[in-house]
Length: 177
Image (cartoon, rainbow, N blue to C red):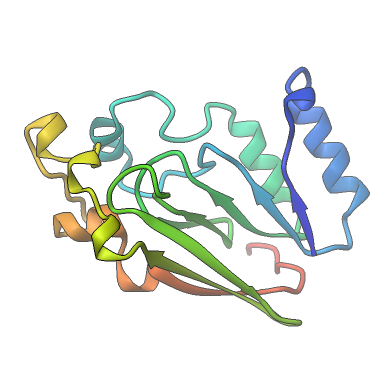
């Protein structure tokens, strides 16, 4: 399995560098690791408001297109949003964890077996939780956000149960019909 993460030195021509890495490792199950999510993990117009910055997903759609074109890409891992969730596009699951800097304080546990990767959101112990660090709620915006797939504020922040524990096959991804 290959983890692809682009470094600062790759920033001049990111599309070309990513394309070269994907080509070079076309036969290896690949997990792309990005700081900013490639796909929105919440309903787009609501996520844009609750996050409050333009960087709620990558602003280079060609990066998503490159990842989708390569059946070796089996998952995308990212953060940045201070939310936990999973989004699927082109059969590629993208997993986002809130991290430890702000509430809901989730970290990811990745267990890798021969045929599957199990990804679980783990919350920090209750004595380490600091709800005031939440950037998506009423403290900052005057409203606790929800969307179609996350009808409660807790689900909006932490994801639904099927977003907090997922399994990904390690074989090549089947192309979309």
